Structures are given as structure tokens and as C-alpha cells.
Length: 382
Ligand SMILES: *Cc1c(COP(=O)(O)O)cnc(C)c1O
Image (tube, rainbow, N blue to C red):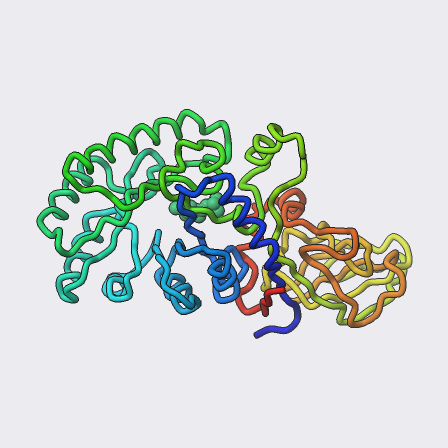
């Protein structure tokens, strides 16, 4: 574990976000917590027990290895589904552990049946329909083929879900495409049901779709970004908040990231700071060195642009972001000392560095900033 910085996870925020989502989605809609990319950088091992504490019992991972980490982090049984990659051998392991997975081609269906027969167990699968994103999923011919195969092997297959993914619900410019996807999904679902195969869960929505297209909630939603306290896009947020008289964001950010000053230095006017010539001191300044760089997820695109909080002041990153360090101008932050707290994400006194600010100054999505937070940074729940 690397101790140059610390990621804190606010349990109250988790409770708040889950309560808000439950209230909005109603009790007929199951929430599957999406925990891909190390739970959006929050840390699977740290956040899953907190989700569990507040009643989440359904999880969506991308990799089988993430699904196993969720499995190992739970204290009571829950449903875990792999939306993406598992190698053939892992399909057998998944079936043994009762871990569910998406089936988006005939190859995977046949492998699932092969292992299920060997193990004499049922493979719990989610049939993924290709409805217009053209990423993964069974088209209508493949679905019909899959139905025939499943009917022949019905003692080895449980259809836990019938699903698809929408191609950009967070932007209104995709409205028509998404309406077409929903229509296609309905048609394919009808084909499945006409064959007396009814999935346990019908699901198509991520966070954005769950809010922008209420019809898309069906009986399960796969919620990632909003659980962690972020809106999928400012469009989705504005659309929600516009209808409210109270303009306070109902979501709370869970994650904070702090480090500390490792050295303080005076730099004379006219000197360059850091590598190359990207920053020139225009006056005598005081700089602080912080042991966090791009190898920890503090993007190089924040060179000469990032902001951190020190002693209740906003301070600018000057020069380029290094692999393990940044240099910050603390001239106006008062009497800075080695060991002072540096907030990279989150609050200090009245000020806050929001992940969304990263996207404004460096063209990174919320998702991207979070997903890049290095897995070995220590994480604690507060
Ligand atoms: C990532 C993902 C989600 C969750 O998306 P959010 O925008 O974070 O809610 C849902 N479904 C699939 C297939 C995904 O890959």
C-alpha cells in the first residue's frame, strides 16, 4: 500500500445516495451497483461492504476478476453479474460460484452450456440484445438461434436477465437513437417471451437512462456514477434540477483524496520551475512539493492547470505533472509547512475541489478521473 496519499470514502454520502436513488426509482426497481474500474476508483474491497450495509444486494462488474473481488468482499450472499470479459475457464468458475454473466454471442452460450453440463449446474445468464449501439449483443437472428439452443439445454441455463445498453442516454442529441433502441429491445423481448422464456430481470438503463427515460427502468437499473454521487452529464443534472424548487444537488460525493506537503521552497522571480520551461516564476514565489503524480491518476493534462487546497486556500499546480510529484504555488497560502494537508479532491474548510472541475480544465470525464485513481492508494471509510 502506498502511503503518499489517502482516499477517504464518506459513508454518510453512500447512505444519502442510495436513499435518494431508492426514493426516485421506487421499490419495484432493483438497483444493481456497478463496480467496474475498481468501483469507479473508490475501491471494491472498501466500498462493497458499505453498499451492502445500506441494502445493495446486486452488483455489476466488467471483469470476472472484479466479480470475484466483490464476492470476497461480501458478508452475505448477493447477486453478481459480469457485463464484460471472462475467459472460457472463468465461465466454469463463474457457474460454480453462481456468478451471472452476459451472453452476447453464440460462442459464449455454447461454452456456458459445456461447463454447466460438466458441473451439472445451471449457468445464470443475461442475454444481451444488440439494439443499435453496435458494440456487443445478439442480433435478432442470433437471438433466435440462442433460443433454440437454450430450449434444447434448458436444464443447464437460467435466464437471469434480458438486457441491452443504450448508446448515450446522457445527451439529448441521442434521443431518437435511444427510442429506436427501446423499440427494438421490446420486439426482441417479445420473441423471447413467445418462446416461453421469461427473464428474471429486464434491464437496459444506466444512471442517465434511469433518470432521463423512466420507461427504461424496467425491473432493474445498472447504476454506477450516480451511486458515487455524480451526475452522468450536466444535461442530466440540469434536466433534473430544473423541475425542482430546491436547487440543492441531492447527491453527495463519496470520495476525497488527500496528500501532504513533502517540501517547501522559495523560487526567485525569473526562474523556471520543474521540467523544461513550462512555468516561469513572474515574481518571488513559495512552492510546495506534493508526492502525487500521473502514476497515481493525477493526470498530466493538469500540468499548469490543476488546483489543490492547502491551509484553506486554492493553490495552482505549476509546471508539468511528474510521474510521482506535483509542484504547487503556495505563495498566498500563508505559513505552509512540510506535512500540511493537501486536498486533491474534496473539501477543506469552506472550499472544495470537485472532480467535475478536472473535466473543465483538462477534458477528462468524471468517469475517467475516478477510474484512473491508482488501486494501491490506501482507502478508508469515514
Ligand atoms: C458502466 C455501465 C453502466 C453504468 O453506467 P453509469 O453511467 O455509471 O450509471 C451500466 N451498464 C453498462 C453495460 C455499463 O457498462
